[in-house]
Image (tube, rainbow, N blue to C red; front, side, top):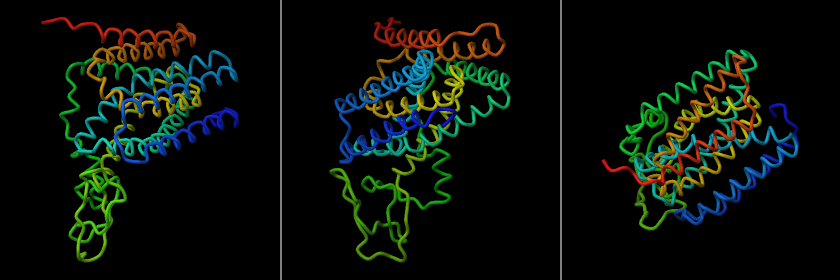
Length: 338
């Protein structure tokens, strides 16, 4: 895979598949994820990521390990904004806390596939066009930083009604929609009047569903708001990948390092979602750190292309960690009174 040994690919695959299975099994009861449970799983995923980084360092040397950690931390920091968008999406669709982990988990499966395609495409562009592709990525990353800077203080994702997202309207053209939650089901069987003909497999307290006593006409499969929510989250992740994948490719053109660091970051962030939901109001300066990191990476990529200077992996890692630390510390300083 991407020029790396089958052993490395196997270690990565076993770690990810085994822990995703355990994660799904431990959240199979449709109960809201507690802060304690989210903290435990976040710790597990972070530990696994750094253990895999240690394996890469042992197998390929410290430089590759440093690049993995830099890419992992960059993806984590860039993804914070996307998690806040997910919170707004759940609110728009009225998804109960008990069902959010189910949507996020299946969203991971789509993200794993889409990131593979994005990384493969980005790596292919670099191979085909060499420095021109790298320069294009550098400019794009700088443009992303500029757009984020312009949007500081203006973003109100919680005010957006994602139930009217274009992906929802597009999906409704092809799949009939049932307008209410039906337990944790993504699809429901209804009669021609749109009344369910079977009870949901699982539902939380207060989620009882009225069934058709005498079904009218033929049975029709309809998508529930849970499925529409999943579609919008997948689309938002794809749009986010346009920014994040070029940024990590700017740190290293090694597609295996880019992909594995992306996946470990995504898996950790799904667990971290439930912690960030409570902590987001405290991290008011983190976005500024992300902007500074993107600006640094865009400039670094352009400098690499021109041959003016080549920064070693340790410098990139230090800059990413430094800016993140500053943003987090600054967020806990008292705000100036107007």
